[in-house]
Figure 1 (cartoon, each protein chain N blue to C red):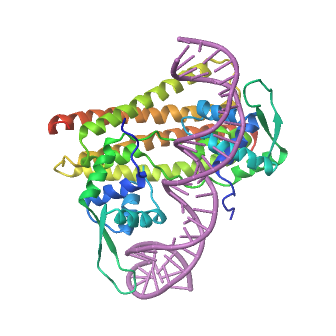
Figure 2: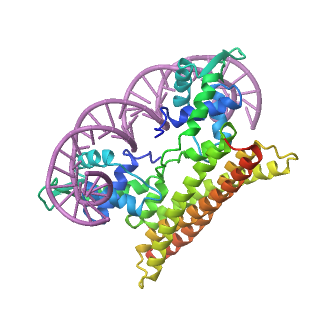
Figure 3: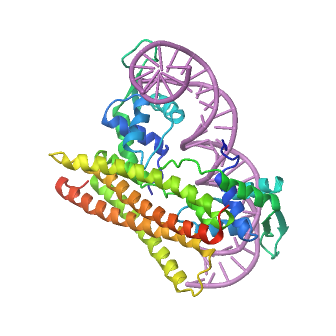
Length: 192
Length: 192
DNA sequence: GACAGCATGTAAGGGGTTACATGATTCA
DNA sequence: TGAATCATGTAACCCCTTACATGCTGTC
């Protein structure tokens, strides 16, 4: 029975990004936002201490990066051989069950205790965010497809992108429907 | 500037369910699993202490429920007037930003550091879960549609259901694609 | 005989966010 | 003048899960 691996997902997200190439904590944060933003998130307050811990466990190594006057010296981390092994071991354990938590849906579900106009506002805000992400993902996908040689390693990135496009498309469709339904309700019940 | 309300989402999930009707902690857990399972989750270790705290703040009231020999007495909670106000106040604050965390996607994104066969196994497991949920949601939706009188309050429940059907349908489509892609990779690279 | 359901709870601990501190540079 | 970017970090805090404790009943 392969038990769940010791260590939290953040640990492996960091190890994984460092497996691509050496990076600073700052870089990692940006990378997560830009490339994993539609399915993952991290905060500085978690990344920096974690890098330190990983260094203590010799899974990563630090090297002072370029220093510039007026700003803190960069600390560039890279994966060690045992870090690499830890990353590979992570894959051998199946992912734990996901426990969903979508606050907008909770509100919708409890919608009858709120004025329809309030829910409508929330849905519209949500939809705007979904659409922005969707446009961005589609833009990236178009650019990638334009690229001549389909590198075999690119398949993983493309799969993650495709996940985003499909799910966010469904989210957009749904929120469009929700908007229409809520507008009907607002009309039939009066606003406030 | 309406600041974020004090209190975590669990608090309002509980308040919301009690607004429907009085319930015990045990009931709340079951209700979340059965009706909100595709977008929300709670654990006993959070529900019971939270009910106690809400009682301390007079947002809910307790009443001893039916007692049966050989098992702990039920403690049935109901919403007070100020609990109701707290719930309504919650809706006036917009929901905070969501921070996604999908471990399967993280694995896919870092897929090139793992053998394709491992990822394939994870995707297949994932897909089986998605399909089970999807079938269940569709079954419920069919049953609801069969029901004669479309109650106006039912619209919120239907909207939450529809969210599930659409999103999980997209998830199924995507994981089917991922399966095919990973099988190709496994073939072209050899397993292990 | 074992397991699922009923029913409540506690303790420990980790995971993760927010807010704060610092400070120069560049751009509108 | 103000905001954004660069860049690292700490402290406080909370949210939430896991594992444990207890014990009867009904079903396969």
